[in-house]
Length: 298
Image 1 (cartoon, helix red, strand yellow):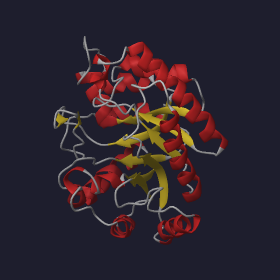
Image 2 (cartoon, one colour):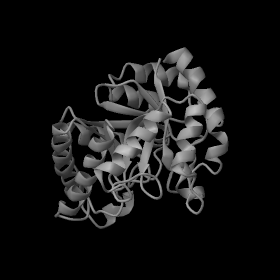
Image 3 (cartoon, one colour):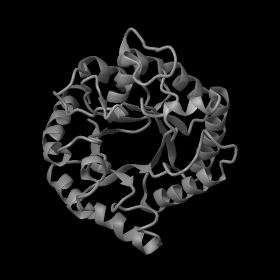
Image 4 (tube, one colour):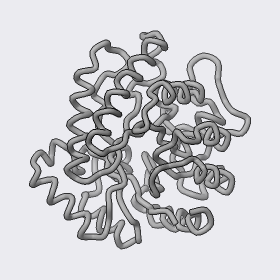
């Protein structure tokens, strides 16, 4: 059976940006619902390197999570103010990454999420080959530094960020070529990338077998999993709609056995309700849905 967590960002951004659910309320409720852990969105009012600047702050947070019987599954780091693809100098990005990496170490968080920061329209300003080399060079450095501190790096691809074609994703993870770097496979993003080709610049690139085929191509390269349904649409024409289980079209009976064969080096499944308008209200239903999937495929 898999350990189940959920991303805290669902309760702090988008529909919740003006009225985020307090961190303490979140972890107590998740514990009551039988979650094993929480995946920390390290920004806003939730714990992050800036509102928990000292070792003492971080020890208290770590203990607070342990006291309700939860673990951290990973950190979604706030790197979105940085430039990755449209600058030759990656110093600022690396420095911000390091702050979040140290935060992971202090809280005992095993993995740190990154993305390509800029939208797919960035290729109107930057040559794709130049941008790709910048991402690869930077993520190589991130992977090496994180490995030295016992934290793995996972790249979440999605329609809303550059390099959102299957071949782009496969090429970049191969070129980073580090055992401490892999792909975060979010099931709704995988569907929108591999089956729909959403927001892909130029000629669309999809796979006949959609997300299942893409998971097969990524065997040995996936090091983190987000589970959520997809209705085949985009949220605000930007990123994948994260539909609660049963509100979408994904074939988890085909997808989850393939993800079980992917070689993910840990036992977490993380629910992602990012931008869902009543995420707090549907959390219990999603936990029940993933529990059923866990009984069948975990």
